[in-house]
Amino acid sequence: MSFAPDLLAGRQALVTGGTSGIGAAIATAFAACGAQVVVTGRQAISVADYNAAAGERLRAEPLDVTDGAAVVRLLAHFTRLDIVVNCAGLIHREAEYDPALFAQVLDVNLTGSLRVAEAARALLAPQGGAIVNIASMLSFVGGAHAPGYAAAKGGVVQLTKSLAIRYAAQGIRVNAIAPGWIETKFTRAVREDAARYETIRVRTPMGRWGRPEDVAGAAVFLCSPAAAFVTGATLPVDGGYLAT
Ligand code: NAI
Image (cartoon, rainbow, N blue to C red; front, side, top):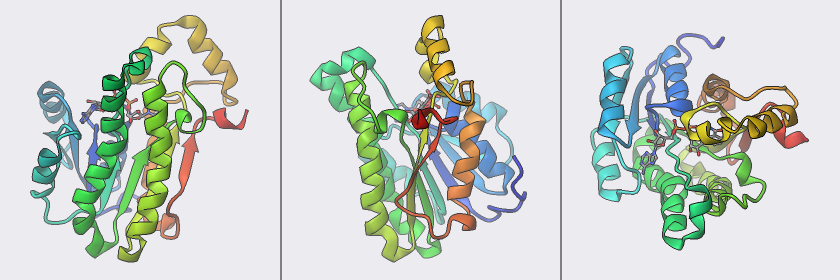
């Protein structure tokens, strides 16, 4: 990564679902650019493991984004907030044809992003902060194997536009990143199917799966002054997958 080490100096960031995978890479990149970063994890064990290894600008707190009171409690600890990344995500694949699991997937991926954005809004306003929501390739195409996840991630793109319009008067920018196929524990089941792994690799014009670090640069850009006039956008970071 080749951003100036003080690009985000003095900024405070919150990354939900940030103890692993894409969120952890984004948090690390923010810290490398000078920000102080709180990441949240769903499980106490992931929070403890993260804090044991974290650098000086990084700290983890437990948070379930479906718990509105917990979201408000966490945000109450901040005196300043410049950046929010809604990265918490859940997928149940075929099981999402069960309406209860469909609703749970929407609650984490979509409603959770709204919950955190609304709770953070007053803190973000004084500095004109930035929100980045994490969408997906399934924001653009249907997912017969994961109907709830596709509905949620499609919704994330629309939510991003709606919040961008609503928050613009306060100087808060709201954008989304749509990662392609990224090697994290989230995609372990797909990667363990060698034929599927290869099909996806070949379909990706850049000829490989993405790494969490591939997504981090786009997040830094969207949260930096370089993106001062960018809001309501969804930026694919997919090695060209959507272009084919
Ligand atoms: P990951 O499994 O490392 O991260 C998902 C995170 O969400 C975990 O930290 C998990 O604890 C957290 N989470 C789940 N339920 C939660 C809840 N109720 N409250 C708070 N946190 C919760 O996997 P990855 O790949 O880093 O996923 C991050 C985001 O990127 C997710 O939103 C996912 O949908 C999205 N994404 C991932 C892609 C991939 O290929 N890996 C592609 C497109 C989007």
